[in-house]
Length: 336
Image 1: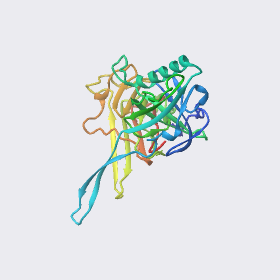
Image 2: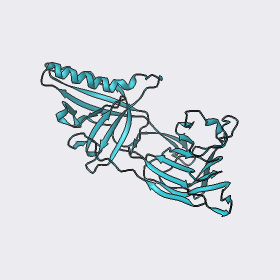
Image 3: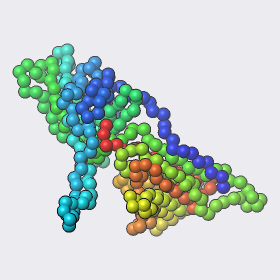
C-alpha cells in the first residue's frame, strides 16, 4: 500500500497580534502584550491609545520557571539531586487606566476588572476557564500562558486618583508555568490509494506502519501531544523511543482497541475519527463517547515528546485507503 507521508507542518503564522508599540519588559526585552479573557475578548496591554497601558517597570514573573528540588544526602558529603518539580507561576502586571472624564474611566476600569476576574467564575459545566496572556516579539513570534486572576485590582489609595485615572497591580496565577507557542506543530501520515495486485483481490494490509518518524520538539520541556486517528483501523499503536543520559533506549507505547469490551464499537470505519489527548488523559470518539477504556491499561503509557529529537512510530492494523494519523503539539518554553 503506498503511503502519503509529510514532514512536520507548521501552519502560517498570522503575525504579531495587536498590542501597540513594543515596550521594554523586565526579564524578556522589547515586546507587546495582550490578554484574552474567557469570553474570547482580546484586550491590548501595551497600546496607550486603548485607554489603558502596562506600567512596564513593575512587571515580573516572565522569566525562567521556579523549581522545588528534592535531594538525597550523599555519604561522602553534600547531596544528590533526585527530582526537580516545576512550580506554579505568578505574574505581576501593573496597568494604568484613564478616561477623558470620570464615567469613561469607570467604564474602562469595570470592564477590565471583569475581564480578569471572570477567570474565577465556573462556566455552565462547572469548570473555570483561564484567560490567556500573550507576548509578541517585534519579529512576529509569540508565546502564551494561561492565567487566573489572583488579586490586585483595587486601585491606588492616593488623593485625586479614581477620578479620571488609576492604576492596578494585578497578580496572575498560572497552573502550568511554561509558555506555549500558539502555532501548533502538526505531523500528518495518511495511507494512499489501494492498488490491485491479484485481480479481483485488492491489496489490503492487516497491519500498516504509517510512519517511522523523527519528531523534533524545539521547546525547553516535555510537550504532551494530541492524536487524531481517522479510520479505517482495527487496532492503533503509537510507540516512542528515547535515549536516556546513560545511553540506554527507553521505549514507551499505548494501544487503542475500538473493539475492547469497555468500548464495544468494533473496527474504526472509513472516515470515523477518534481523538486521544495525553494531558490530561482523554480518548473521545467523534460523537463525544468516552473511549478511554479502549486503551491497553495498565501498561499503556501516554508518552510526551521530550526536547530535541523523538523517534515515533504510528501503526494501524486493518488500515486502508483514507486511514490517517495527525499528531499535534505546541512547544513549551521556560520564558516568554
